[in-house]
Structures are given as structure tokens and as C-alpha cells.
Length: 142
Image (tube, rainbow, N blue to C red; front, side, top):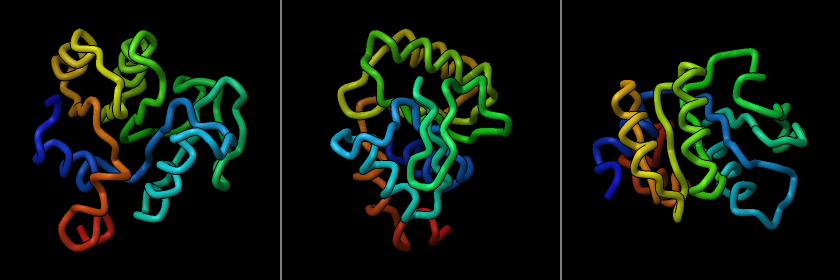
């Protein structure tokens, strides 16, 4: 398990409410689309990051993390494991406080680098599954 329950809670409740979702596009069939909607319901600002830089869920999209002109608290990664490590490195460079690799996304070397850089990190879990489980109904209860 990459990220214990306390880490999950810290990322969801304490690190901040601006989440960059890498791989989020306007494609309603993709998991990122539904997960982003859940995060918004629980009070998160969701910033789409995708080469198309589309507006999704009412939020302006950006082609890369580096293109976002404001601070990002958490980077939620919906790319395959082969590409995820580079995204984690970009999250460190961006100054994010946490990185979340989605279900099925695992890169142990990236996990070690990201944690060594001082960021919280979870791999192979889904925030849309975890956030409703939090005490007081999720992030808004904190």
C-alpha cells in the first residue's frame, strides 16, 4: 500500500483545495471526468491538465502543469504508469504539496523521489472512493 489512511486524510483534508487533474478532458467516458466531478462536489477546485487544454466542469484547462498560472495543492494523475513518474517530477517542480496516482498507476521510483522531495503521496487509490469515507462527510467537514 502506497499511502496509509493518515496520508489519504491529509491529502484530502489538509493540503488544500486546488487539485490539478492530469489527463482530464471533456470525454465523459473517461474515469477522470467522473472523479473530477466528485472532487468538485466535495469542495475541490479541479484544474484540467491535458494536451487539448479544454475547459472541463467549468474550469479552464491547461496543456501542462507548468502552464497553470497559480499554485496547485495536489496533482491527481490519470496517465499510465510509464508516464506518471514524469508527472510526479513536474508536480514537485510546480510546488505542489501532494501527488495522487490513480487506481492502477504505480511507479515506485517516482514515489520515493516525490516523498524525498517532501510531498505527500498516494498510489493505486482513487480519491472519489476515499473522500466520501472521511469523517463529517468529506473535505467540507474539516
